[in-house]
Length: 121
Image 1 (cartoon, rainbow, N blue to C red):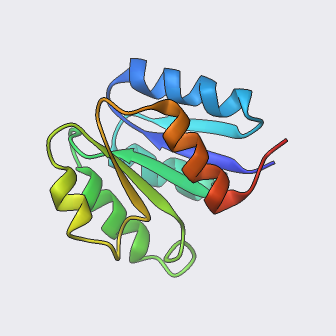
Image 2: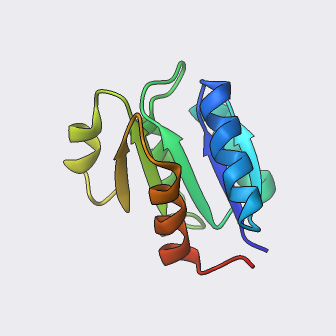
């Protein structure tokens, strides 16, 4: 079973997306900011990361750069969710496999996760 790390300081968004991915058969772990996300990344070894852009302590781009700087996670697929800064994510295709503007359709993210990881069920 593939594990997905969701990093978002908006708990409601993380919960809704997490429940939807769990319903699809994926294991989900969450963190409220990039620094905590790095801790969870080391502990859980997820197959994919979904991160918000605007977060305290470390934004989504800084978080993605930290992931890419580590040899063990340099090729980890990362999806970015952003309310107003999607263009920044799209300008750095070396960091993100895809960028979703908020509000997003959960089904679109699930479809992209399936493309990257395969079906969990």
